[in-house]
Length: 243
Image (cartoon, rainbow, N blue to C red):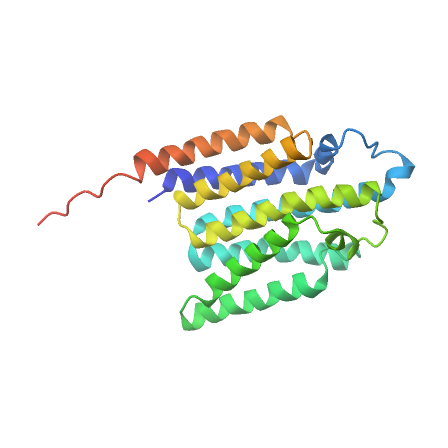
């Protein structure tokens, strides 16, 4: 069930993630008024590149959830934890904050390990609650979410504005994680893409941020194929069982 949506959504996440990992400077196009190469924009550049890496990692982690169940969640966490290591240990960045973000991910990982050994749905619901909760928090664009890891992002600076808007993008990707955890493909994929479209629409029409055209095209193709699966391939009436 939902094979077309599953593979399409996975391909979408992998391609978008690879593009951003390869060229994190793509996010510069979202802020045309800022010259990220200028010395005066060093702080904003640091926030933009760190946020782009986080976005790339979380988009890929969302794709891993198409594997379904415990396998999907563990694959997703295996994508997320290397980001923590690179940020905190290799680059010395306090992004995301060890408490509560990294600590909560450790607890959720342990919950999934417990589920693997003892059964139940503790891992599933803990993962959905964590990602949905953090997602909704990032959607608020609270200044503290940027200023905790980037203390130089003072009120009125480009660094804070960039961090808030890219943090919003991280927020709707995390909400897509929660939906993919709770709802199986193809409807889970459709719902996740709906969240992504709503997020891009808010950035384009409320914040006047130019959303990259390749992002819109890729999302449109993905949504169309997921809808085809939901409406015509997996959504029809079940065939009667042979007696």
